Amino acid sequence: MIAATRSAIRHRWLVAATAIAFVVLIPYFAAGDPPGVDSPSFLHFGWVFQQSLTGAEGSSLTDRWWYGGLPYLQAYSPGGYGAVGLLGAITPFAVAGAFKIVMAVAVISTTATTYWLGRTLGLTPIFSFLAAALLVLSYPVIAGVGIFGWLPTLASMPFAMAAYIAVEKWTSKQTRRKLLYAGALLGLALIAHHMTAIAFGLAIAVRLTVFSIDHPSEVRSTTRAIGTIAVTTAVVSAWWAIPFLVNTISVGFQRELAGNWEFEAATFASSVFDRTKIGIETFPSYIGFVQGGLGIAGAVYAFVYRSRLRGLAVVATVLFWFSTGTSLNPLVRVYPLSGLDVSRFAFYVAPMFALLAASLVQQFSRHKRLATFSAAPAVLTVVMLLVPVVDALAARDVLRPVEEPQIVSDSIAWIEQNVPADETVLAVGYRNWDGYWIPGRAGVPIMDGWYDEGAKNWRNVRAYRLMGWLGEVDAAELHGIMGREATRYLVITDWDTTDSPHLFEEAVSSSHDLFKLEATLEGTTVYTTR
Image (cartoon, rainbow, N blue to C red):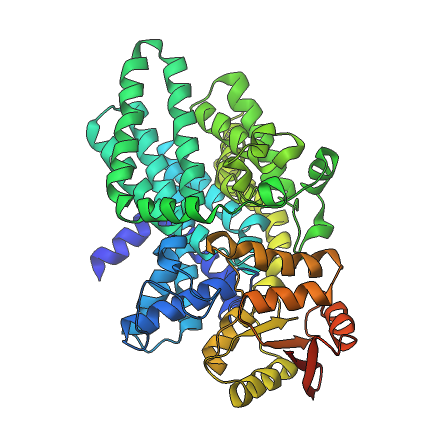
C-alpha cells in the first residue's frame, strides 16, 4: 500500500490525467446501451463471440444473424469486440456493461500513452499532463466515443501509441529490442483495429524517414529498422491478417465515396473551429480552439526551430492531410486508400496536436519574463484547459447511453412472437440498432447488418441502403433485393429518419401486388413479400 502510494505521488501528473479521463466518461456509465453509430455492430459482434465462448452458438467463426452468414472474426479486427465478448463470458457483466468497461479502459490507456509520449519527447511532467488532458477533453475523442462508437479504434490506440513511443526511443538510442517492441505492439494494434494500425504504420514510416533525412549516415540502419518493425508486425498479426486479406479481396467492397466523406476544402477549414458542429453526426467537424490552434502553431514552431518534436510535427501534418479527404489529398481517390474512413484521421492526429500544443506552451513558460515565476507552468496549464473544459461540457450529452424507445420495444416484441426463427427480417428506421436488438432480443436474423465491407452480398444490401440515403425508394427493386436475400419480413418504424422510413412506407404501402400488410403497431408497420 505504501509503495503504491509513493508510486502515485511520483506519477501524480499521470494519475491526474487519467482521473480527468474517468470524470469525462461518467455520463457514459448511465443506464442504457453505449451510444454511437457503430456501437451496435461491436455490441453485436461481442454478443456473438460471448455466445460462442459460452457454447450457445455452434460456430465461433460465423455470425449467422447478419447477411445470411458473416465470417465476422475474419472480416473485422477482433481485439476490441473480442475483449467485450470475453469479459461478458467470464464475468457477470452484460455485453453492454462489458463494452463500456473496455471502452473506458481504452480511453484511459490512450490518455496514459499520450502522457508517456510527452515525457519521451522531453516535455516536463506538468506539460505531459497538459497534453494528455487536452487529448481526453478534445472533441474528436469525445465524438469518437459517443457519436461514432469507435470501440476498435480506441482499443487499438494504446498499442499504436506505445509502438510510436518505442520508435521515438529508438531514434535516441538505437537498439534492436525497441524495434521488436514497436513491431509487436503495432501487430497487437492491427488485431484490435486494422485501419488504426495502418495509420500508425504510416506515422512510424514517416517518423523514421524524417530521422534518416536528419541523419544521412543512418539511412541504412533506418531502412533495416523499418524492415524489422514490418516483419515483427507481420509475425504477430499474420494469424488474423492473412484470413482478413483473403476475405477482403474476395468480397471486393468499394465505397461510393472515396474516403467515406465528400466535402470542399473550404468546408473542412471552416469546420476545425466551428463549435456549432459539436454534438452533430458529421464530418468535417470541430477539433478545438486550443487543440487545433495551438497544435498547428506548435507544429510550425517545431519546423522553424527544429525542436525535438519536429518529427512528430511532420507525422501530424501527414495524418492531418489524410483527414482532409479527397478535397486536398488525391491519394485518397486511389484504391485501396479509397477504402479509408478519413474522419478517423482527425482522431489519430488528436494526440499529436495535443502534444504539439503542450510543447508550445512549455516553450512559452520558459520565456525570460516568465522563467522567474515558479507558478508559471501551473498557471498556463490551467488557462490552456479552460476552453477545452467548456467544449467537453458542451459535448458530454453525446456520451449518454441509448435507451430503447417504446415503439422499438413493441416492434421487437412483435417480431419475437410472430416471426419464425428460421425467417429473416429487414428492418428500417432503427438507425443500426436493429443489428444488435433484433437478433439479441427477438432471436431472428436480419437481412443486412452494419458492416457491409465484410459481406459478400454487399452490393444487394448497398442498393437497399442507397434508396434511403438518397431518398429514392423503388418498391419493385426492394422486392427483388429481398427475394434474392431470402427475406420475407419488412418492418418499418419511424423512430429514426436517417434511412427515410417514411419513404419506404409510402412506396411499400401502395404496392399491394408486391407486399402484404401483416400488422400495424404504434409507429411501426410490418409487411411480408408476396
